[in-house]
Image 1 (cartoon, protein in one colour):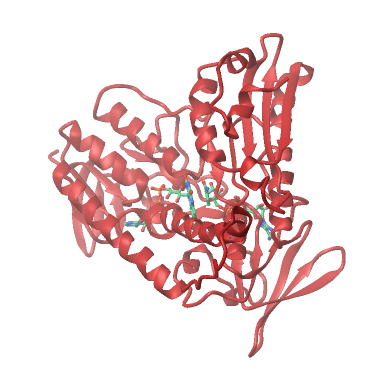
Image 2 (image 1 turned 180 degrees about the vertical axis):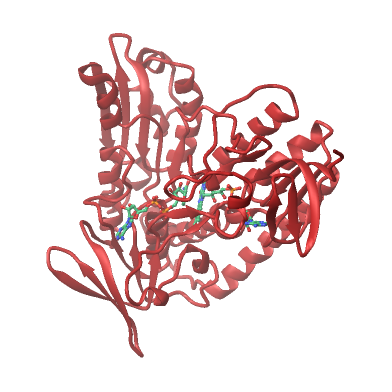
Length: 448
Ligand SMILES: Cc1cc2nc3c(=O)[nH]c(=O)nc-3n(C[C@H](O)[C@H](O)[C@H](O)COP(=O)(O)OP(=O)(O)OC[C@H]3O[C@@H](n4cnc5c(N)ncnc54)[C@H](O)[C@@H]3O)c2cc1C
Ligand SMILES: NC(=O)c1ccc[n+]([C@@H]2O[C@H](COP(=O)([O-])OP(=O)(O)OC[C@H]3O[C@@H](n4cnc5c(N)ncnc54)[C@H](O)[C@@H]3O)[C@@H](O)[C@H]2O)c1
């Protein structure tokens, strides 16, 4: 049977775009459907606009340091409305450049919602098209707890469209999104209360990292309430009232309530039940190690498969899929040493195993090296904030299983260490490599 396309991609986020371009580079006839804007969550309401806010907040923090560095009269005024307008303009520029890339690659863009009719047929705006292979890259959406008054809260999506900065911000969920926004919004002048059902923020990260970031945020004035869940939100003329269950019940007064309690795959209303694509417990698309679903010609990558919700992971899965199916080079993604960062101040980044995970797997042969120090940048100031670095090693050879850091440039430092750790280096390799002085990164080469 002759199909309209060799590959039809649903969703033009990082996963879908990478797969479409790579498959086209192998000569495949490719179309991609996108119901919103090119770039998906990452470009429009995630990584990119978030990092711009991180930079805006850093300017405010630099102002606080300036006095200690001999500057005076550093008072400046921050205009959120003007700033967020520039962010949206830059995002439009990115859309333009993505469109250009698709055109150059020969990929047809269909700006519409796509749904399945049968395993080889897609419906877009009442029109049916056919494809030999179909890739689902539809991403995810914020999950909100089902509590009375939840409609008065917002998700990270609306944070990028706030008309003005709230005076009091309550955040439910102390994971990546909650911690990043608590840090940025605090630096920009909001009073932030962060709530998590766990005892500490950033579950899943190494405990030393969690406590160091939590301590750093507290020192800056972010109020953290652990072991708590939201019970109810009430609207009043002046504010929102958030009831949380702590040891007892507490009411928090806020102007805006951000819910950041995780994200769920966008797998409803796609017609998946018609085509034999099975879902897991959280609605994620079940795939094998080559991203093939339970239907032979249909594949899925990125957040909708709920493997690791990170942009580089979605891209890597997409490229491995295109290489395997269209490039005839079987490729799978290794999830063992995926570095990640939390762009808070202090910044946190990790690669490999936490101490707890390593001990679970290797028991008593695991050893940790850790150091806490005041970064040079802060030594002239009253800010006693500490940086933390930690290595998790195993066995007599002291093979490095994980590296963790909180402090200035943690993401960039861990990014470089990730290559070496993936290649199986030992602590001695780090000892024998000279550091660059004076930096925080050199501390990884100076453990005793
Ligand atoms: C606030 C926030 C900050 C983040 N920060 C980072 C970060 O700093 N670093 C990092 O690595 N990750 C970050 N992430 C995660 C990252 O954004 C995601 O992991 C990544 O975008 C996943 O890519 P994807 O292609 O799987 O899905 P998405 O980027 O979600 O793209 C899916 C696309 O599919 C489209 N779509 C859905 N259904 C259909 C349909 N039926 N028809 C047509 N189109 C459809 C959607 O409109 C969307 O554009 C962040 C996420 C959030 C929410
Ligand atoms: N820098 C980055 O790479 C980055 C930034 C943002 C988001 N992301 C990705 O997006 C995903 C989603 O982010 P997220 O922060 O929404 O999820 P998350 O899974 O990182 O954190 C959710 C937090 O909410 C808490 N929680 C859940 N239900 C709760 C409740 N009812 N009451 C109180 N607390 C509750 C959990 O204990 C957890 O700490 C992340 O897992 C990550 O993969 C990455």
